[in-house]
Length: 504
Ligand SMILES: C[S@@+](CC[C@H](N)C(=O)[O-])C[C@H]1O[C@@H](n2cnc3c(N)ncnc32)[C@H](O)[C@@H]1O
Image (cartoon, rainbow, N blue to C red; front, side, top):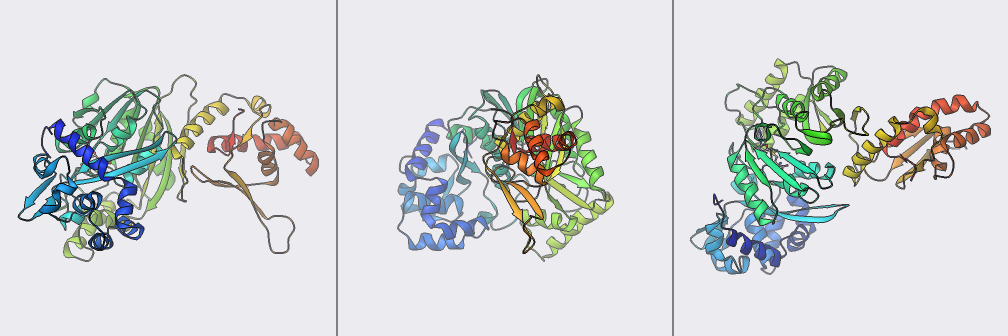
């Protein structure tokens, strides 16, 4: 990319992309759903085959060039770049002309998110990926908006007009997302190259981001933010082994999970009271999963923590994932050497598994109650994770501020996405298993007993928990007070998990 892209050319590019319908849906339409699904598996062949069969349009030319990394005839450039022109696209550093063919020098694709703030769509310029390069990525590769980027954007609790720090901004995708609800966004990165892409993407999408270069929190020394988001370079990478590439986009250069530990530890000095940091991370497990949880919670120090472990990989799976991500071919001598380097590194520290997931940290503030939660949740998720996390934090504070008596006197409501499921042995009238299930957010499934199921089911905001428990206890002919005492801790948990809501 140009160092200081000409804003006039970027405006023309924006107009071309807009009028071409270069959107996530527009591209799916351009090559069809089957080809789009194949692309999701990194297979460009069906999309290329469809483009060869279908009429030429601007969206198809742009998709061929920038998403599939294939050339287009120079003669069709005026269709692809109706306003910008081929000369403008070359001047911006987007493409190069090679005889009768035009080839992309960067990856450029739409990225979209749909949440309670509506649908947002951006164009993200980044380095060419493996498909276009046809081989291993260079160490300074700047990543586009990948699946991890979407995951983080999807769980980010909105800042409601506050300030946001995007640490390790890369292409700037989190900063663009944060700017929808923030008054001010700062994006930092150790890579000057990444910051150039972030600047282009901010300008291309008409968003203002304060971009700063430096290691971790160095560029924001002494500053605090209402939100910190980070998809940091969390990949645990062998140090000191020969020929192991050090990718800036995924490897922070620390031993083991030291980079994630540093991002977590640093958050305490950069959050405003009540401020929230959210990041993706990997952490090492050395035999004892409980000790690994304590280690992660220890990084958090005085902050609140809610960690959701989404996966627990064995060292070989982990090594294979990241060796493949770099572009080494399975089974090749290079592949074998790299996997071996990863396994030896894990063995040196006694690592038996690697946890992966989401970390939410919160600085204590007015109305917040201490929170330490680490849960393993590897089941499929629903929509609305950011809302589920924000609701969970609010519900945690609400219930923590209430004594058992006050909670018992509250009129709670069952969440609208909750359903009850009964499982029977064949021929048995009474269920052997009762479950509550969420239809959205973390899509949790909770086993409950008859009393709790009845209390949750009847929680429509009319009767208090105490009244409901007494009524159920009378029917079941059990002691009301003892039943209430047993139910209240579960009610607190169901509130935090979002099955129940505080009074409306
Ligand atoms: C996984 S990429 C995330 C990019 C983008 N935020 C996203 O969500 O797609 C990690 C980013 O962290 C940056 N990075 C690596 N080491 C860093 C460090 N020590 N301090 C700050 N940023 C760093 C990389 O250059 C890269 O842009």
